[in-house]
Length: 110
Image (cartoon, rainbow, N blue to C red):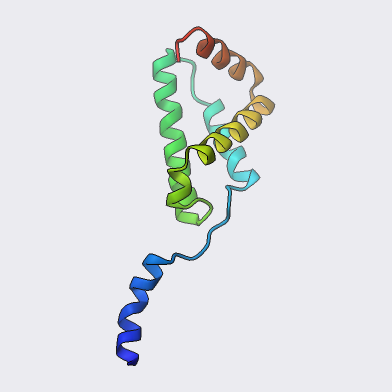
């Protein structure tokens, strides 16, 4: 009986993962916003690609740290909420960049 229990533990952990924090912390959001603000000005397409790379790298780290689950990473509402939090932080750090991005988005460049 004990052998079966030991053998089934990895399966149980895989099926019922430990709970994670519901959302990345404020310092984690701030770090991502700072990294995006430091991306050099370039064409809208190149900037968007660089921004997405930064977000993917950072979110992968959040998953490794347990701040974001795979399910949350695939949830559009959660990603939208994270994007809103990052945009608010970016506006505090680099408001001119946020306005520039907003204009590019309005013009259809992004």
